Image (cartoon, rainbow, N blue to C red; front, side):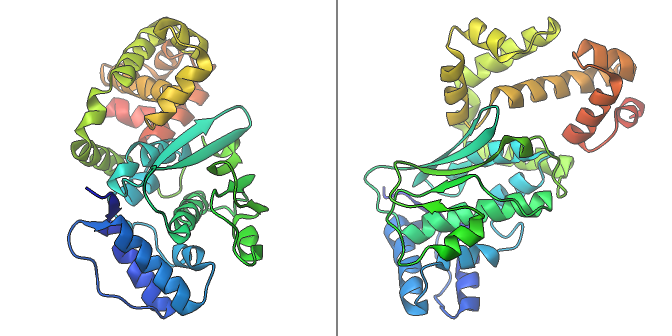
Amino acid sequence: MEPGISSAIVAPVLRALAELGFSLPPPRGDVVASSDANQLFDAAAAKLKSETVGLDVARRVPIGALGMLDYALCTSPTLREGLSRTARFYAVATQRVKLTLLEDAATATLHFERVSGVNHSRHWIEFSYAMIAERIRGTLGAPVKFREVSFTHGPPAASQAHDTFFGTKVTFAAPRDVLVFDAGLLPLPLRTASSALAEVLELKMKALEPELAHDDLVRRAKEVVQQLLDKNDTSLDALAAKLDRPKRTLQRELSRRGTSHQTLVDEARRTKAQALLETGATVADVSERLGFSEPSAFFRAFRRWTGETPKRRRRR
């Protein structure tokens, strides 16, 4: 079967194109075939005489308009968790591209891997980049400039509008499709966060992609992180040693599955913190048992994870 794009994505794109002066009837069925989706954007670009139609559409799609995956990103407590969810469940939106979040000390990279054997309209790829850029800016409430933006397709006649949109010199005909930004943005809280809604959406998307629940590496990594947490050593070195993998290899493998070492540690800490608080443990005790430097650091982390304070959870 030809891979395609979810109608939940195509429908708001059509609405935005109509605002720009190009109209087509709404899609039929749950998935729009790849060739039909390409023709849609290419025809719009030709009629509107625009080489930036993907960017223009992204500016017109409000938060939440792209459905479940959009809400899952925006309701997450931090940018890291939001983008990790987006990468993990990207197949909910399209089967034409695999999205991976990679982290190092200085940068975070979103790698868009085009599925081989599938034709891709440049405008869909540029729309995808622009849409995530808009969500990062919108959920953080900040005018983020990107460190690197690279496309494997060729350049337009003029690329100044692309440079302006992303806040950096955009590279075309590059070896890979990447969107790179400052890693310091990842732990920042999202102003659109909603812990209750995020948990519901997580369950709904897991139901759509049940194979993720059976991924042996992620399952094993979660178990090991829980064990390491009890020993107050949740470092990447310790996890890699337990799983018998080089650190960078483990980082890549986790990222391909839409998660990371830090995400697994946060999940383990959050689960254990909730359990300890609900049994009556004090904030100071939980902070110490989870390896935080001081109770105030745990307080901030718990509020970021859950949207409520440790004391309120303890009372509940």
